[in-house]
Length: 261
Image 1 (cartoon, rainbow, N blue to C red):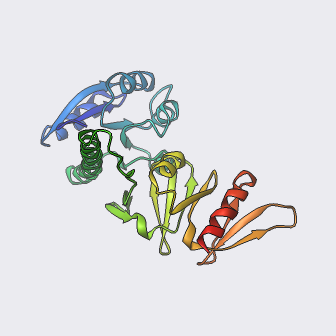
Image 2: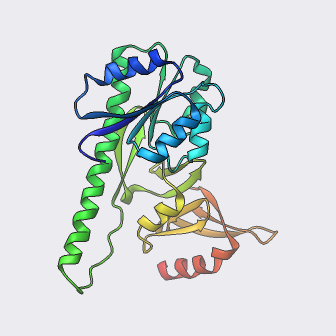
């Protein structure tokens, strides 16, 4: 993301697009990078201009807003604020990893709340990006000197309308849930829009182990490894949680548990 938030406005009603543009005119550091009047145009514009944030109408003729997300892919979509006159779409919108949902007609206060929530998430992502770049530059400056690989020590999530940080040290295990991963920490669950593969690569393998395509566990939280009569395996964590273990990962996990004990 640059210093300005680049925004795409998608709605089949010109007046609705203008209302959003008028509200954005009062916000600092904003650039309306484009508009689209239907789903097909929205897909093309997202792929062409790569906006930071999309205001996306749900109900449009032909390809609707939910179809746009499915076509682009939830993992590839920019931050998205859905807009619609029909509240029955709210649950489906959040299933597509929307950062917020505006029910028409919305007032200035509700619009501002949604926009500033998105701005905060973008700012936190930018801080993380700069930090990673600085570490890369420092490593380049050291030439051939070996430097330990950097792993995540915190993960940014949104919970109940607030952006917060979950320390990785508090995470007991991670599970997949549709377009989200769910972080389980101290009895609480936080949804984060990230693929399991990416999280696995960013978590310290000396601490975490992927026991299944849909589960990553903190090794020191494992209490026992269980075998079912059919030959399937699972792990029981110290809090009583039971998670399946893939057969292809069983042997490696047994070695890890042995190394930990």
